[in-house]
Image (cartoon, rainbow, N blue to C red; front, side, top):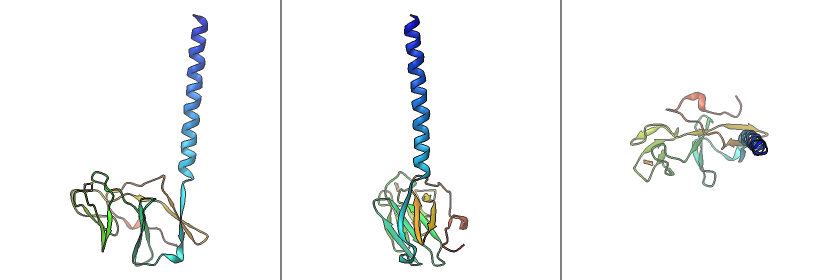
Length: 146
Ligand code: FES
């Protein structure tokens, strides 16, 4: 019986160690998942650029402010499509403007955004950390020279 108890203790300890270790690994991956999007100069103000595989749109506003907007509709998760002035969800008709703000229900919350950083003239987006938001705020914008 004593041996059986020791086996259980050792198994528990191993499991615990593995659990902590894998949690750390996830955390590490999360902090390093910056995806290179391209050269800053290739993205012109007033345009929305689709990144189909990465599932986001890079929206570059007229003043150069940038948003990396998730394609995932905040209603039930379908992929939104880029339309003239914003985004349209083909599933139930939600519409969003170029900031990702809801302009037509049933969605009630703005599209998620991803953090952006600019380094060495290139744009990077952190796909591991989608940011939920109720609505657009200026503080969500990333600028090249500010
Ligand atoms: Fe987009 Fe329903 S999933 S409107």
